[in-house]
Length: 380
Image (cartoon, rainbow, N blue to C red; front, side):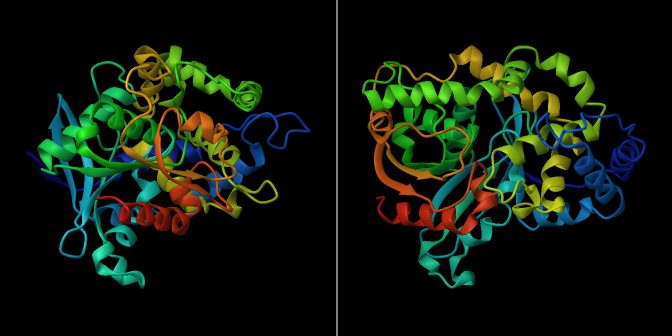
């Protein structure tokens, strides 16, 4: 059963956020700072000024409410999702899953392109039924009683697609934790999946690397990720401690997320706004703030650790579900050699993108949409 939902954040909630931003007590950073020590102080001051003086959350609400929004209780959690039925006589169902620190905002500008390609110079018969849920604990979805990881979320999303929406089979796409959710969907619910399209490699083969090239990749990956491990370890072990500061500080949440958006994206000359406008950044950040979900969203890291971390079970690999891989060159989690990936996935499409990074739907929407559509045409 699903209920119609509309985003309508009370004025008092917005006023409280804006007041905290306006009254934020600025501190200091090293004189040679830049972005070397984390989110740049001068940038955050400029960003917060724009936030208070120019950003209008109601415009984001309008973009979300333009689509049909619903909630459905699955396994005791109220799951929010957008459901945009596609053009044509038989559109394929397409599930789009975001990750952390993302939200449904990542997909708002591509839903129409996917559902109604004829409005963008494409063919009506290429349209999808597009389903975009907020992950449990994120945004407009409810939370679990304790942390859950991407495998449990995959079970919830399969129930959404099959039991709630009645689809017998569907395509799943995702980056970040959305890519992990797609992987678990293919592992646990293969009979329901037409295919998966992923733009990240988070999961690992239990046997580890085999060739010299694969072993070199693993060592390089470990070395490169050391500088990123701080946030990941904190959220996977003691998320509650972090929450007391973050839940009281909109500027703190913004700085935490902006650091990732800048560091994981294909930007020019170190400028985050060469890819994202302040308003796009704020729309995503505000989803966490207006729903008070920074804390519960971080639980996914704890949940993944309890589920066993990155490694898949050894049985039933490689996965049987047809898989498309989109490799964006500035993805901060370096892709393994194809030989390694093929021991996990049933690869039917392998696309090396000319540009783009971790947040593919926001950074290079046309490349992503075209790749999804190309993959879909070869699925039965």
